[in-house]
Amino acid sequence: SDSRVSPLLAARALGIPNLCIVNQFQIIIPRRKRLLRLAKLTETGGLAIIGKIWVSGTLPLLIPDFPPPYTISAGNLRMPIAYFRRVRFVGPILPVCPDELPSKEEIRERLGLDVDKPLIFAPISGPLKERAYIIEVLRRIFANFPGDYQIVMSTGDPSNPIVVSKHGHLTVYNWIPNRFEYLKAADVIVSRAGHGTISQCIYYGKPMVLIPTPSHTEQMNNAIRVRDMGVAEVIEQSDVNMETLLKAINKILRDDSYRRNIEMIRREVAGVNGLKTIVETIVSVAKGA
Image (tube, rainbow, N blue to C red):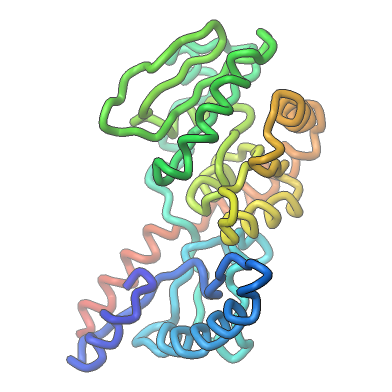
């Protein structure tokens, strides 16, 4: 089960082996002042009931995140100490590993990108309602960026994967099927603060400028976490403009500490393979059933 309680309860009632995969243990409700008490009560009660079900499965609870001290979703995984005995950090699920691709320079040449200019890659994903505004804001800003950058942006619409526009140094796609090639070719990533995107950036050793979705507590926690790890800058959506974005990108490109930090973490987690571990665990449970 991917966090859902109902299939876990059904499996236990039928005597079927089961396991649960989650990367957000804490139930977090965006806080408004007049609903603060209700939010706290709901979070506490929900955690007590749902959390107990999650950790009482056939196997330990699987968390597709890096083991401590490099856990991205640490702010969303607060739980009673007793539960940690039933938790296993298996690593994020990565569809394409960096060593499966050609070198950064080879990819740039093949994609027709300048080998020497800094490449900013902005893969914007998520529900249309959440990404529509920031896509238009970033499109306007990037179109007026200095010419010594090259920028590739994806608007996250797989229904029509063609070039939307090309404006000098800015190329905007609806969808990029080979996004991992652009990820490896990039110098800086500009994106939302989803767990999947951040974990991919860490695996590929790419520092980030993160713009969390407003009122999305999980994304804000993720963004603060990697900022504190020294591999990202964070800008709230309401503060995104030419000045703040260019300043954050220049800071990352000019301060070697971001690259050193992300490279150190990348080396530490390179051997963590969440996909392989989860598949092996599922097969093992199935064979023992």
